[in-house]
Image (cartoon, rainbow, N blue to C red; front, side, top):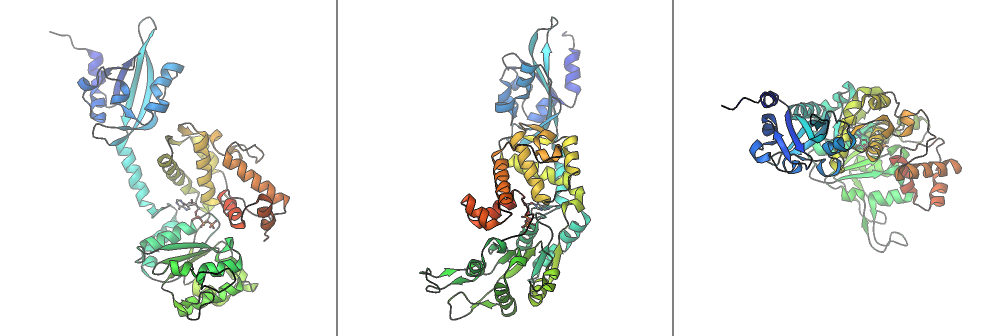
Length: 441
Ligand SMILES: Nc1ncnc2c1ncn2[C@@H]1O[C@H](COP(=O)(O)OP(=O)(O)OP(=O)(O)O)[C@@H](O)[C@H]1O
């Protein structure tokens, strides 16, 4: 009778998957847990190339076992995905090591892997509870907003969303639209600060042919495009008195006149507006009409800054890692303790947009595995802004910032110097979280 192989008995008793390969990458052993996790029987797996059986997202570009056999360094608990025999993605954490014979000669490698499906499911459940639309938060103030959002969405009232830049005002407006009975109709967003006054007016209300010299054909405005749906007016605090009067008329009479039109047009549009300015102060300074403010501010949703909801940082970091993983070829498994610490200790003047940009930056520099402090923008871990940017986006941001300083933050002059449109400059400043030190045209 064949003597029992105790090594095999032990390896088949553990709940982690274990397989070994020889120096030609052919599987020499496949335990029972490996069969269960991959859905492949040991008799089918043995003697096959490991990447044909253990189909991991890192097989081609960053094989952990290969790395270990080349460098001699083990990989410990790296989170990856494999594709099982049914074609389903299974999250696993892998560890690797070298196999040596009694003379110390390398004869292959060993990989152990743990099924993380349950952990992943729990994480997704947890995230689902903290999510409305694309917004994620576990902060009590935000969760109060999430709670009343369906009722607000179901009504047709105007909503004024306030809060510092990058706190998610547009995302919240989209969530209101997507939860509302108007969700099948368009959601149209207009950034009122990005357009000069005359252009904003024709952009919003459209014009008839012959309304002005270049108007050969009539053009529908954003109100017309949003008909039946929702119009989101971002940066409403920057709208001129002339446009304010016209908006007031739409809100009061539900109609407007395109430039050069003889008859008014009925507007079936829900208005949502947002600002990071203090409109009450603007009213006192006679820069904003009180009557328009009251019409817009039927419901006010105020978003707290990220500093006021630091508890959201880990959740948001995971969310942005997932998002970037889905968009890129890379697999980033998470963030290291020290890197998360750097983020937790930062004040984020650009709020969630700044955090999202920091994770995007880390994706460029991090080859895989965990995001470490060195992968984050230098100002987050070195305490200074002086480091030379090493990504194209970083260089563009630096270039724009330098031009703004050179031109005393005058955006018109900077746009001219850089040969770009003022709205493009504005968009890029927002993208790179460059904030004016002196407000100017
Ligand atoms: N709660 C959130 N969960 C996930 N992502 C968020 C959240 N809030 C904001 N974001 C992301 O942060 C970025 C900025 O959000 P958004 O443009 O909505 O901010 P904003 O307040 O409208 O900014 P601004 O005042 O500069 O116009 C976007 O990439 C958005 O997807």
